[in-house]
Image (cartoon, rainbow, N blue to C red; front, side):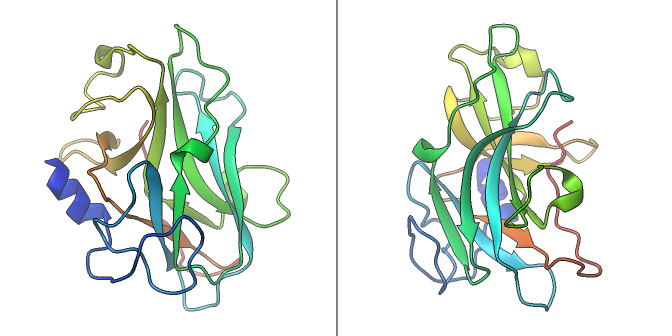
Length: 201
């Protein structure tokens, strides 16, 4: 799949609005309008019920030690009225556990209840079908096989998740400029609300 196809698959293409560096309670961010260096999300309710107050959290996981504790990297409160979010990557803390033997971390973007003390999938209210990846300079592509078809960037970057036609796990595609992604959020206890979850491994 080409980068343009990634944009069409994961960005909200029909909305109108303006980019912002703070939560917006009005229009979503239009595809192509995300500022360079930001992660842009449009908030999509997963059911008809009102969205609750919550917290958005970015958390790092090591692909080399999946059972290691998740490392929070960024968080912000959500009122439930947001329709879009624009998060400067400069505000996302780099992972602290990288080493030459484990030179990369994968960042999930999730929504949890405001008073949640643990980050576990059982208490997630929402998730974005996009990931951040932080790589040490010079991390070799071959270390991950074909999981980064259009390149790997040093530092923290935004990647669209794309399932290959004949594969079970998602690949990472560097997001094209201006890409906007969906953040699906469910009210607690909502029935039939199943946000798409990134599946890189």
